[in-house]
Image (cartoon, rainbow, N blue to C red):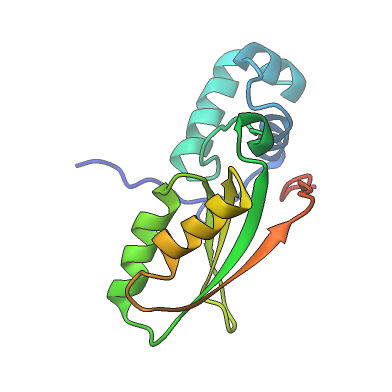
Length: 161
């Protein structure tokens, strides 16, 4: 029988794990050799620890940070979506389908008057309007969508700083 994967709640991060996460947050392309050197551990230990961090769900992935404008999507917006009624099937379909739509950077299930915030990048204001009409407001259960243009996007230093 397979051993269950430990979650980060079952085994908290020690100082070395935190250092590895910080280093990868700064540069996800860092080689194992450089990562080990910066963390002050052996390369084999580093490999095992990073693998463990992935298996425990601490490191969810390593991604390129793409400038939407540089790839032809200069218009960014945060769209607040509110459902009428709260049928589980509507939320599940939204959660499963919306993050995979073209231009969606992220989707966040939130509390308060808004049920979801959807961060999108579009080619133009017209394309943004079409996205909202074609992919959000016509979905089952969606009562209202309010679009806020993003003028500037600032990235934080990460959860361990």
